[in-house]
Amino acid sequence: LSEPSFIPFWDEFARTKLPLCVHMGASYPPFDEMVRSFLDAHALSMALPAQMAFVALVGQGMLDRYRDLKIGFMEFGAEWLFYMVGRMDHYLDRDRAIQPPPLSDKLPKHSIQDYLKSGRIFVCGEMEDPLMKEEIALLGEDQLLFSSDYPHGEARENAAQNLLERKDVTEKQKQKILYDNPVRFFGEP
Image (cartoon, rainbow, N blue to C red):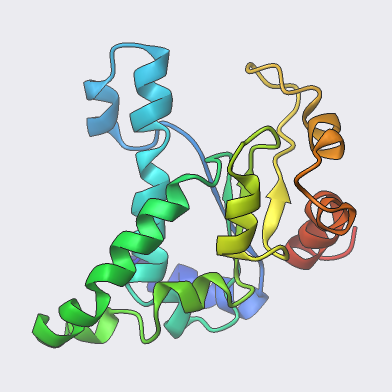
């Protein structure tokens, strides 16, 4: 996603100020060759592309280059963020010091945590996710979105009800996840 051949696309994208949605899918053929079951596909070929997109967009300086860019990670869940943010922040300062230009010029200017809290990265969490409270703490309550791909093969017809019945999420947070945050990301309906 950060390849130089995409620069005209990104420039136009920035001009229009549209939010970028990165959606789950088996989008990387080498991963498809590794899977033998639906469980393999959900765990690898449909999940690792979120991490690859996150590295390309956040880790390769796209949020510095395009300061109004908002990115939404759709249907990947949010658990993968814990690993990626921790891993990338762990190595970022070291990599800045050892990476020669021009590659070092593409590294993020700030910590990955700073980008996460910038109000520009949104994630569709799973409403039954037991780590939702921690995801809100990591990402911020203004950037978690309701995952509403319905009808869905995973039978998520009651996802909104699952959220509304949660006791570990405040009413204000529920309002934000179901309505306020999607409006912040996509704009008024």
